Structures are given as C-alpha cells and as structure tokens.
Amino acid sequence: MLMLYNKGMKKLITLCMSLSLLFGFSPVLVHAVSETKTEEAATTSVTTTAPEDTEAKTKARATRVDAYKKNLKETLTTTVKNRIADRCQAAQTLVKVKTRNNTDITEKRTEKYDGIVAKLESLATRLAGEDADVSALNANIVELKSKITLFTTANESYQDALSDLETVECKTDPTAFKAALEAARAAQVKVHDAAKEIRTYLVGTVKPALQAIKAASESEN
Image (cartoon, rainbow, N blue to C red):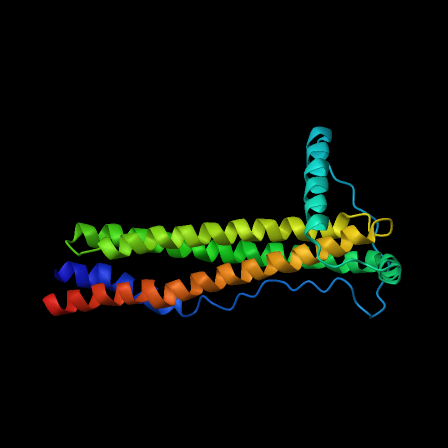
C-alpha cells in the first residue's frame, strides 16, 4: 500500500487541487439587436465548401429557421420588423465575432474536460491495480462523460443558432432574424446550465470520491 500512497495518491491529491482551478466559463452572450449604431455588415467571405455540402447545409439551416419561427411566441408588428430590418445587418457583424469567440472558448473548455476525464481514468486504473476500491470513482467517470456529452450537444445547437442568426436574410425576413435570436438565447441558457452541472458534479461528487479514496489509503497506511 506504500506504493499506492506514493504514486497513486500523489496524482489524486494533484487532481483534487486542480479541480478548483477549472471553473470560470461563461457562454458568449448574444446581444444582436442594439440601439447603438454599429458598422455595416462586412462582405461575406469566400469559402471552399463543396457544392453538395453547401446545399445540405443550406437545407439544414432552412429547416432550423422554420422551426425557430414556429417556436417564436411574439408576433412582430410592422414597426418592429422595420426596426430589425434597419439594424440587423450591423448586428450580424457582431454575431460573427461572438461566434468565433464562443468557438475558441468551447475548444478550450472541451480540452479541459477531456483532460480531467483522461486523468481520472488513468488514476482509476492505477489505483485499481494497487488494490484500491475505485468502483465509486469509475461510476463517477461514466456520469461525468454523460454530462460532458450533454454540454457538447447543447453547445452544437448554440453554435448552429448563432450561425443561423449571422446568415439569415434579415432585411427581407426580419421575423426569421428575431426567431433565430430567441433560439440562440435559449440555446445559450442550456449551454450555461450544462457547464454549471459539470462544475457542480466535479466539486460535489467527484472531488469527495477522490478524497474518500485518499482517506482510506491514509487509514490503511
């Protein structure tokens, strides 16, 4: 059991401490319609997407936008539609920046999640080989992976909504823009909740499980 404490426990203690440094994620807020005057939308960049891929993406986007419009509870007045049409292209420029920012944040967040899972799995394997009881820890790892999958799925929907908000023909269809905006806001909440759920689980469940293994090892020693 001395080897367990020297090797496995050292990694366990380090992982416990690192969990508290993980958090601080906040999904990018969507403030697309602004009273502040902004620059006109930038020229759409040229892509190298294959024609069949572009067609498939266009159809998928159209399907999503139709769904957004069906879920829109607000009935827009002519005045509101005109206001959106006047300002939406400038707002789409801001959304484009926010989309890139959210992509960067998500990549870093996902890397951290994957890193924690990898460390937990490696630690569980090592401790199991040294006769430690890691059944609870293994169950925690499975649950953590499930929560990370929910986060990933929620964020994909959020990214889709931001992309739709950025590319919809808002001047001719301001209702679609408003619907996409509301969809992006709703998706953002789900991303935030999923990230919060992971944080709560790591602090409230995984960390205590690691501490319990550490305490059991110290008791045996």
